[in-house]
Amino acid sequence: MPHKITRAKTRKFVGIEVSAFWKWAEQNKKLLNFSKIPTNTLLPEPDWVRIQRKYDYYNRPKYEKKQWTEEEDARLWYMFYEEGRTQQEIGQLIGRSRYGVQRRLNRLRKKKLTT
Image (cartoon, rainbow, N blue to C red; front, top):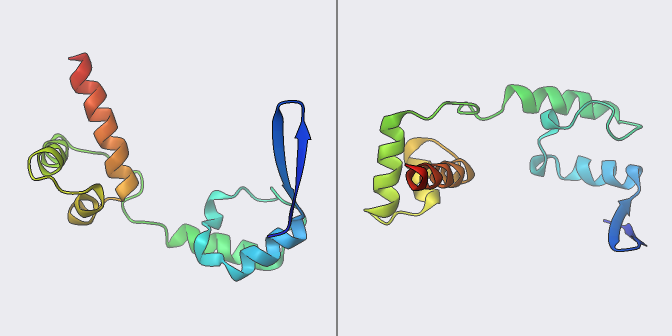
């Protein structure tokens, strides 16, 4: 994607042209979750974005915002540390994303260190 790098003292900014972004986004719809992009963030918004945003919202993962139970925590801990499974494998087995498993393991480690 074409971009322009601007430097300001100690920081570097990468700028893109909005129309170029929307062209790229239309070709790569599967890489973005438009339901997480607030309306009118990048103006002008093409008409297809509203439709895609609605589609992404209704087809989001079914386990989004699902609370972890103590049984899942124990199973997660056992599979990772005793069985030596990867975060990806565990996620597939318990119906969570790899990143969800990673975040939960980090929280469990912190919890065990403070107790």
